[in-house]
Length: 82
Image 1: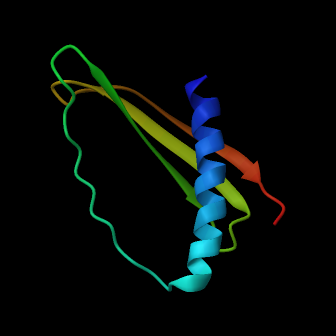
Image 2: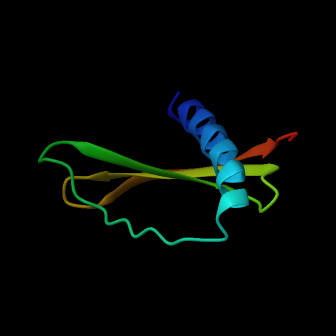
């Protein structure tokens, strides 16, 4: 279920990135991981696309409140017709 949700999110991000890339050449965003509250688990996910936006992939990691790695995943989502 989580991988399916990440796939959908990645496709939406990819579509937004294709539109945005026509407006800007590049920009950098710094993101810092923050631990969840004690007893909770946090999932961090990311998606990637080729410059043309036609190949999509997603990755993710689950960590506990101490920052310890619990499980990770990666998935090639596929080719998108633009």
